Amino acid sequence: MQLKRNHLARGAQRWAATALLIGISAVQGFAQAVPKASYEANGSFQLPGKGRPGAPDRPSALALGPNGTVHIADGRGLVYVFEAAGVYRRSYGQAELNQPVAIEVTAADEAYVLDANRGKVYVFGPGGQALRTIGEKGGRAGQLSSPIDMALGPNGYVYILDPGRKGVQIFSRDGLFVRDIELGDVIRKPLALAVANDGMIFVSDEDTPGHIFAFPPFTELPWTGLTPRGIAGRVALRGAQMSDPVAIAANELGTVIVLDNNSGRVWRQNISTDQPIGANDMAYGGAGTGRGSFRDAVDVVFEGSDHLLILDGDLRKVERIRLTTESGLTPREDFDYPIRVARVPRGLPAPLLDVGYAADGAPIFLLEIENRAIQMLGTQLQLYETVYGDSVPAFSPDPTVLQQQFSQGIGRVAGAVLADTMVVVADSRRNRFAIFSLEGGAPIGTFGDNYQDNRKLKGPRAVAVMPDGRIVIADTGNNRVKIFSADLASLVASY
Image 1: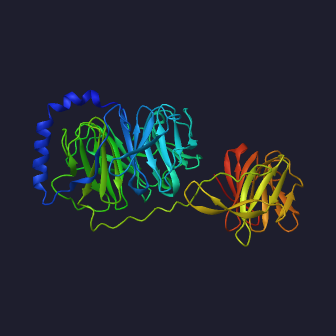
Image 2: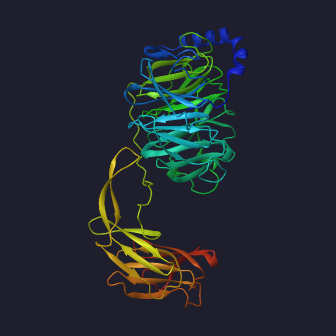
Image 3: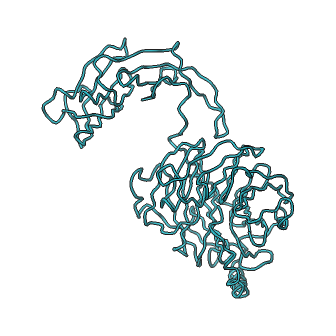
């Protein structure tokens, strides 16, 4: 949700077609039995004139905060906060922001602001105080090259659209890099991004005037390599000829909204139903200066399920509309991500290799000691206030609960895993893996260096244990993944 570039230069070109566009809109609207959207005076407001208090110089993006507050980013480096009726209250970000292009605000009133020039997301508290940053300028995974849009997805993930890296990068809300979705040539000129409550990812493309792209939740996409073309579904917008789809919004009912800057039109489609409404999918807008018309529409955001706020940078207005199409639709199921990324607890005395769980559910940390030994360490429970806006049980190391060491016969620890009754350690120096019993830490045996067949290991780097007891080894020196039977009598698979 943001301004991708300065659209004012094209304003003169649109004036010649204004009367024609309004006429077309009227004909299309007449073909609909019921209007798809209506203007709402309550919540619509005019921004202060330039130079006055609370006046953004170049409005570039907006977001809704708690209690109906409206946050509007100024492309010159500030965020202004207004009440729902348009009364200016405060601003923030002057010391941090340079070119904000997208903004999201959480229910806890934390604002996430993407700065395109500085290549990072700034997080501000309820009072506008700077809390932390996400990402950094650069060209590698976990860095931002030329970011243009951002969305907060379900379960607290931050999605950033970065054409410079030809993809979407995902971070946890406390700033940890989670993964990179490489779009490749599926989308040539991405412009806008939205993430729905079910994890669906929507991206608009300047080169596809009649549709936008839809991707499944990131956990269902390949974790390495380019995204295959067949995975990118299309949300067709009947009658649309969008040359500048600058913003996308999605609600929990499966409705996707696309705002086209060039025509000033809002297009609507619902991915949960194939029943069309009216002659086409245009819902609102047109080029012009009056109510229901736009000259530089730069952003759109849902307010609840059936209201939208539209920001026009040139006309300096926020227009609130109500969709008449959302009644009777069933909410889509929230996507419950199977993973939650968070920072490792502070105070660990050594690198963390694995986490197991005691009978009471308390985590057990498996730590590496100077590359030569493994230490198993118990934990104590603490309540931790997270950046996701909730409090969760957190565990910190506590040697008084449990402390045990495994070291006999280990040359160099490359990886380790804690299973129900044993600890398995990959030893890269001695080309084998060692198994220790949890009862007293006694060694059970070593395997992989004494074989003369395809079970022989060379530089193993990682290890895992399957639920049925089979042991998986990343045999780096042989460029193989090898799976041993639970009784270690045979090699089940090698690939």
